[in-house]
Length: 268
Length: 233
Image (cartoon, rainbow over all chains, first blue to last red; front, side, top):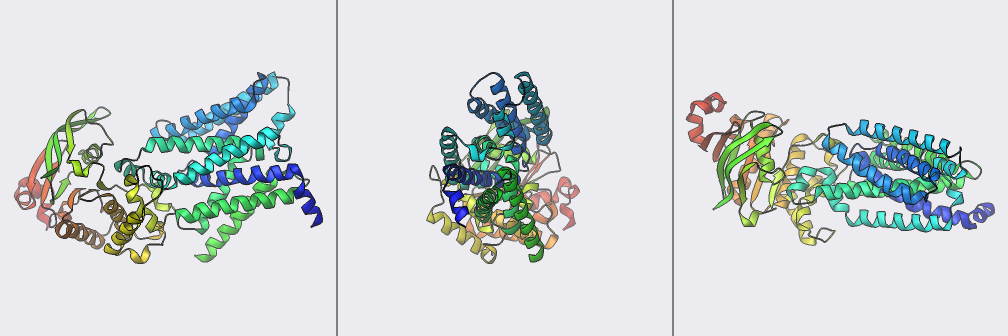
């Protein structure tokens, strides 16, 4: 116990907890929307795009986040509008974009002379080695995402539950779809730093799925998803000590999903 | 007074002509049913009236007081069937067009949602999950939501699809009651002529253009009405 308190009192641990809790909240909130819209794979696709953008930024010696944030936002707009148009199916569009971006990233980092340590951090997360500027950026961005989500919760619900009805009431459905795409993109980029591109999509999907097993109201699902996400993150971070934190957090989420599924089965 | 005036409306979907020079009016307080087969342009008509789709020719004019206040009951989508939403949340979302810039529902809107659920017999299931309800109850919930959006006009798009005959009849009776006792104007799109004939005031038979427009009794006597199933009852 003393050892635990000692670990928690370290500065890097405080930063990791602060950023982690905020990102886990963002991922949990948006995850509910993405799972409901059948876009569960969009987080995965966007994280690969983020990886590609970062690798190219490294190769060209540009500021990594300054490149990745706009590229991922644009890709999110593109993917969500493709899914709306239905000309190319949304899931194939995600697959095409994510594998192309991943390949471009691998080629770019090979051209730049192999594996930079930083790149490794983006692939697998480096939550315990956050720099001060990362912490500030992550905190601001996640706070904005959470605030906008809560402010527009009712409209986001109306648009997601029934877009035709929302349109008939004069709600600007396109605007809210863009907003959701924007919030998702920001969450993915910030989350990449935390658990890495490989695992961010699980932060988005797992808590939402777990919450949907248990609750039957939108508000309940949102609250539970946030709770599960933060709990799995905190427990995973503390348990990880010598293990890779990102992977342990994902395993905690997975365990929680299994428990929720069993609870739902038993209830029925 | 005419609440909705459709004048020489022409709409194309991609390259096919969905609506060809369609004109009619919806009068205040009446129950008008648009009948037609699949592909007759019924859904296009609905979308154009709601302003979701733009006309290529002609116009739709809404009376000032109903602008943005049409209680729309759309066809259900696949995603809704397993959406975690409490009945209360769905009904409340009918007020989404009236919140203005304010992000939350007002006390008056919450009271209206509660009163509407009471009226449609949904009070007991207000906290239940929408996806756990029967098809008929789900339609009632969507009807309650539409009533929270509308003061005067309901626009129902194939509301009885997938419902069994008994539940269909109950839904028609509820809509008819809203029209007769609450003065609601109802515009309903349907292919269930036999079922609706008893309740509707007027019929518009659509096949991309207007084949018939008149009272239900007149329609039942025409060859067209008989061929389309009005003789069955």
